[in-house]
Amino acid sequence: MKTLTIFTPAYNRAYCLDRCYKALKRQTNKDFDWLIIDDGSTDNTRELVQSWIDKQDNGFEIRYIYKENGGLHTAYNEAIANMDTELSMCIDSDDFPPDDAVEKIIKFWNENGSYKYAGIVALDYDLEGNIIGDPLPNQKTVNLIDLLIGKYNLHNGDRKNVIRTELYKKVAPMKSFEGEKNFNPHYMHLLISKDYDFLVMNENLCFVEYQPDGMTNSMFKQYYNSPNSFAEIRKLYLSFEGTPFKFKLKHSIHYVSSSILGRRKGFFKEVNNKGILLIALPFGVMLAGLTKIKGSK
Image 1 (cartoon, helix red, strand yellow):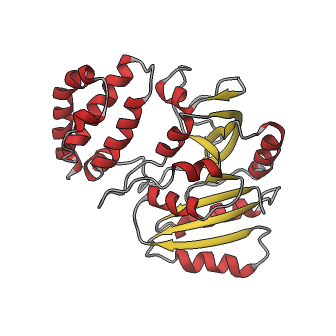
Image 2 (cartoon, one colour):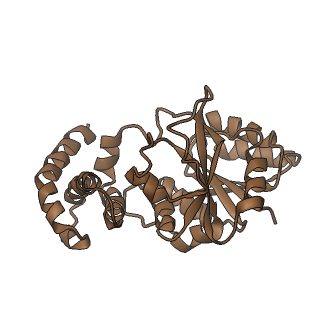
C-alpha cells in the first residue's frame, strides 16, 4: 500500500489537467496514488485520463471516478470514501506540485509524524515562485483554527494541508444542501483542528494558479447560490472558543445574511452569543440584500 493519496477534483478542466499529470510523473518519490474525481465533466476529461492510465508506465497508480456534478465538497466526499492510504492531499486540477513534493512529505512524516497530529500544513506558491501569504510560524505545530482567527498576525494565504486519511473519514461526508455547490471543504480541516494540531512544514508543496471559473471568484454569486452551505461554515466559526470580538461580529453578520437567504428558520437558536447576533442582525439584513442584488446578476 502506498503512503499518500493525491486526489484531484476536476470539472471541465481537461485543458489544464495535463500540467498536473506531468508534474506527478516528475516526482522524485512515487510512493503515492493519484485519484481523480470527475465531478460531472462534459469535456474530454474521461478520455484524457484514460489515455494516461493506458500508458502503464507512469510509476504510480491512476484511479478515475466519475460522479454527477455536485460541487467541490461532494468530490471531496467521494475521494475520501475511496482512499485507504495513511495520508492524503488535494491538488486542484489547475495546480501542480513541485517535483520533490512527495519526497518531502514522506521524509517529513517519517521523521515527525504520529497519531498525535492531524497531518502537515505547508505552503502554496504562485507560478512566479512567491509564497502565497506569509510563512507559517517557526514552531513545531499550529492549529488551523488559530491561523483562521489571526492568532499569529499572518497575512492569510492558501496553504497546503496533508491529512491523516482516518481523520478525514471521521468527519466526512460533508453535508449537502439541494442545489448548492459552494461548500468549502476546509470545513472538514477545521473540524479536525478542534482535536488535533498540524505539524508545520515551511516548504512549498503546490504551485497555484487561479482560474477565471475558480471557487475564489464571484463570491457574491456563491453566497447567493449556496446560502445554507455558507451558514453552516459560519456556524462552525462561531462555535470556536476564545475568538476575538471582531471575528465573532464579522462571522455573525455573514451567518445572519446567509441564514436569511437560505430561509433557515430558528437560526438564532443554532448558535451561542445571542447578544452579538442581535448586534449583527441589521448588518446581516443589509448584507443579505446586497448579496441578493449582486449575486443574482
